[in-house]
Image 1 (cartoon, one colour):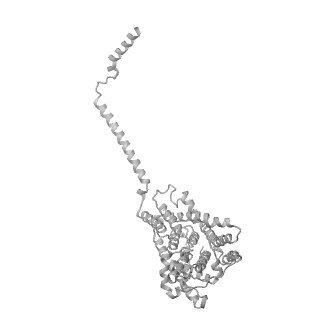
Image 2 (tube, rainbow, N blue to C red):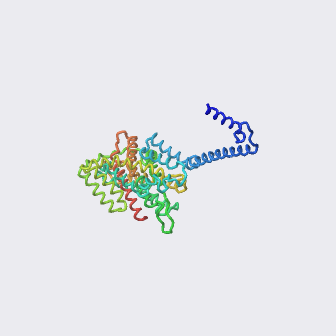
Image 3 (cartoon, helix red, strand yellow):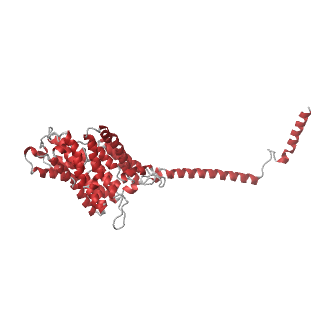
Length: 440
């Protein structure tokens, strides 16, 4: 009972002394104190809103929407067009689709300094691009090409190698054109190889001559033209079915298009095994600077023809070349960043590339007509196969075959056209080695 009285007494005392302690809930606070408290709360709310707004603004500044330019949008559209051409029209899809995807990847706007772009040291794309800049990927591509190429048609009819050599006139014509437009000697040499219509060779030579690193005799640095040169070379390779047929019809009469060539002789397996060794020695002694390309080309062919290394040959012509093609296509495409690619030089390179491809095609066709002046009867050649002297393997040979069938549905030119086609690959590599020897 006492405990209850004590507790009640304490509670009563607290009730009476509560106003003195400031606990009276009914008491009204001082007006000034209330205003200060309200102002502080308002300031805090405004601070939170300001910080939130700045956070959103900072996030937006890091997005592609804030950093996009008209150049980025244009290049992304070009990448989409490349993909569309590869899918819709089957124009070199193994090349155009990776390159198109790379163009899109390379032109997603970003904030510099975050190790994102292909030209930023330390970025993943920059590491992958190393294989382009240092010329690693092209020899590996040549290894795969060698492992999948049958040189039988060339061995059976060696004189057709002249057509592959004649088509290289496009290389030297483009070289002179580039000099006329004001490019330095090494830059003109790298641009000239577009005329060979050989993408890996164009990348290899531009990585040596027009890489943005080498110093010219006057002390200036050569321009980095790897991206424009590679894109131009691969673009015109893909457009072989569009560019070459009108030139064929213009220069070759319908009667000449109907010429039937005698079947090539059978080539023995021993000849096929000897050819890559002999060809390697002859071509690299003529042009030692082309050794990385020609050495891998004929090594790959030896793997194929030796009959003892089928596993290695199969790896070279399937898995290896597929992997390298993906890396090469994507990184070459990604190197076309708008701020670097959309320049006057790039536009001139594309123009020169188109002219060089036309000249190379014309050179092969006209030289084939010239050869017929010295050939009689069954030894005459169908001049159409001269167009396959460019290095676009095997597309130009297929185009020649298709044009031959249009003139004569029973005239099969594919095997004949493959001879100058593969010799064009060899010829463009030799031309690249000669340019590298003189201009490096």
